[in-house]
Image (cartoon, rainbow, N blue to C red):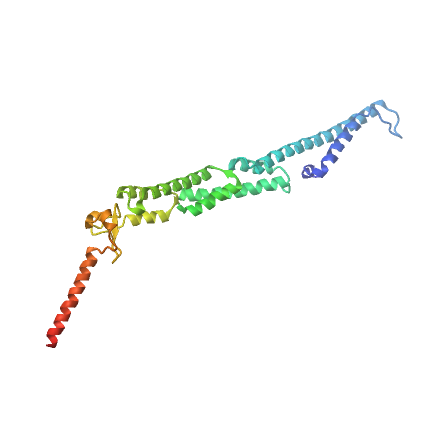
Length: 287
């Protein structure tokens, strides 16, 4: 009764049998009509009218049969694309399939799958595009969660490539940070500055590593310059000093059980002398 029923598998055989029956009826050479005088012209007119009506109906049914064939071909193609795990599906392909699916029954399983995947992919791409266009910076955890969702959908698009490359760039940057030895003061201040400036242009951030680099840029020692080269820590105040600034090299430092910086030593001497002076004053006062 409706074109959508043509795409229902339970009606496939009915349509085929109906067309076959119609074609058989068209093959009748003659027929006898009771109560009508034998009139060759009338019989011929009736036969031609009958053939025209049946021909039109069969043609329409054949058109439906062709549409059904196209639907089955589309279902096979769409199912193959959506179910594929060998390679990612371009979002444009999913959108095109979704547009095509409008011509077929919305209750079809394949149509439902295509529309659902296309909607999810479109929503993902829109969210990713918003991040990229606004310049919003996201953490590595957030970037991984976003790209993992695209991987789960098995889709690809320019937004996916941009975020994936940004994530790879940040991971590569982290490897360089670890290799540069900034945490141990084994890199020059210029190198640390370049790494920090480079990170400022990233979409995907690694703030923990940036904090470590900035910590390496903090002022240490009596010279108040960044942590660099051989450093020795004071067991009194916890401050770190450049070996050359306090006249201590690595070989000498290995012989120390404890190291007390000039400031701590001076403070200790000051306190000791103050205590001695206070004792003398008390003796004088009580004499």
